[in-house]
Amino acid sequence: MYKFAARFKRNIYQKFNFLNESMQQYETVIILTPLLSEEVSKEAIAKFRSILTEGGAEIVHEDNWGLKKLAYPIDKKTTGFYHLIEFKAPGELISKLEVEYKRDERVMRFLTIRLDKHALAYNEKKRSGAFNKKAETSKSEEVAN
Amino acid sequence: MANDQIQYVTAPKVEDNRKKYCRFKKNGIKYIDYKDANFLLKFVNDQGKVLPRRLTGTSLKFQRKVAQAVKRARHIGLLPYVADSLK
Image: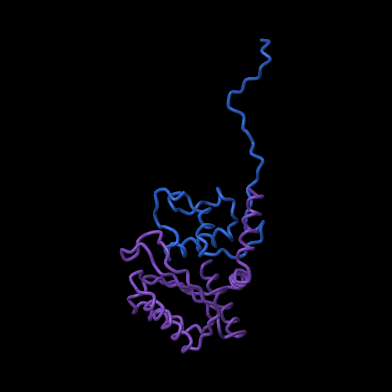
């Protein structure tokens, strides 16, 4: 019963958001296999970028984390190329994008999430000066502890 | 009879005056980033399980968000699903 109520509430919120602004902001992280050469991985990312822009999305921010060690092996590989794209897109595009991810063998893992207003504020802050903010929070936590 | 020393039958309770608090409420953190694995490490035990609220003091609202963030971090390989000695 409670769950139903929560879902109902969420639907209402989504509808209102839809009225205010037809584009939601999303964030997607993809992990590419480490076996690729740099050019191929760049090309793969360019492909997804073009899927986004052709679908009417507007790319807000991109971040390449490079080759990172995984916490556990995925597809028998212990490392992966991480890439993050933050974008504004109409909701229908997301399923198309994820289908493309699934079809592409170079993608080991992906995660796409919708950003709420707190997440937007956080990302904005991180982009403007991540280092200062991190130092601040860790400091205040040290005092608290 | 004249035993001045007080003897307790059961050990007296030592009260811990430090009250637990929700660090998100206190520090005004509204969003928990799933990409920050080092931060999330504070909310999992050395097996990689999410710590209960009664240990961390996190409020219910943020405990849900912590759990969500930990699960996302696990999915993209930043935190392990199972581990032996994480810390």
